[in-house]
Length: 81
Image (cartoon, rainbow, N blue to C red):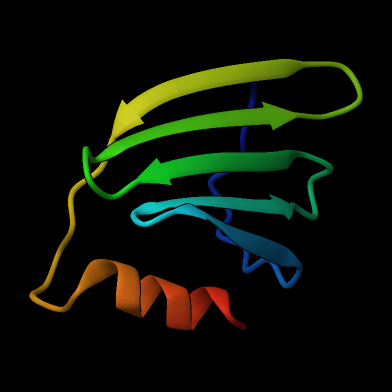
């Protein structure tokens, strides 16, 4: 899967709360790729699916919270876009 070093800001996205500390975020990039990720703030696990008209790629990983604010409260405020 080839990517670009050029940074972009995507304007179209959506976020759904799946549980107390679990969210799904999805967006369509200008490159034609769609990225959908489930973030579990209890465990720090993220599972993502990237796809376009030719490929589907599944990624598993972890993430860390940076800062001291309540994660789900801030994420819900952002997700309410």
